[in-house]
Image (cartoon, rainbow, N blue to C red; front, side):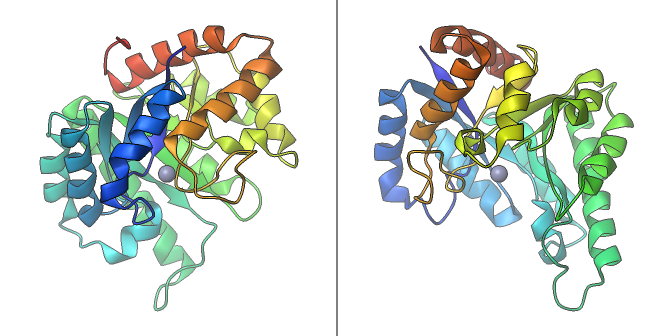
Length: 271
Ligand SMILES: [Zn+2]
């Protein structure tokens, strides 16, 4: 059985660089043969690309997280374009809309959200220009407003690129417009939390080929490591509970989620 952690943040300060080699070894011991590490700011891009250059199991995505848009200069897109052309960069992200965190000091909520939407459109434009797919974050305090806004933006680009809505917390009904546009969703360790029944429910009924597995590490460690630092090896626990809920063996789950990763990130079949 071979799996991929389709979304982690190995460039995070919570992963000291001298520990990365051990973290990747532990992942492989749990059958996690590939990892996709995502940048969240311009500074983070070079860091993630150099990790992907150093470790053949790791691929990078580059983008500006919606919570970083106020700290990013308007001219960022030229630099981002250069990073995106790097051979180890497999998609654009993490981008998206975050209506959960309050606007930073000096910004109105409307200004902050509208800059996030502008950045998201710019990331989509870059993805379509370079023929890459895109990784989307959405988060709301209540309801699904950021999800709906992001889907509406995706709709304008869906004939030229595919999006994954990562760490998907909603029902399959809410995911349907994304799947109808040719997009994907992905599930984190939240699927193992007893108080997050919807996530496991969605993962149970989501068609094979429409979802991937991820950790979003260093955050959101699954049970039995909930509350600790998360790491790519823990993809295993999320895979285990989702396979069980779907009535599949781990091997069966791995076959279709790996094929989905291969196709989405264009990184070829697991050797
Ligand atoms: Zn993330």
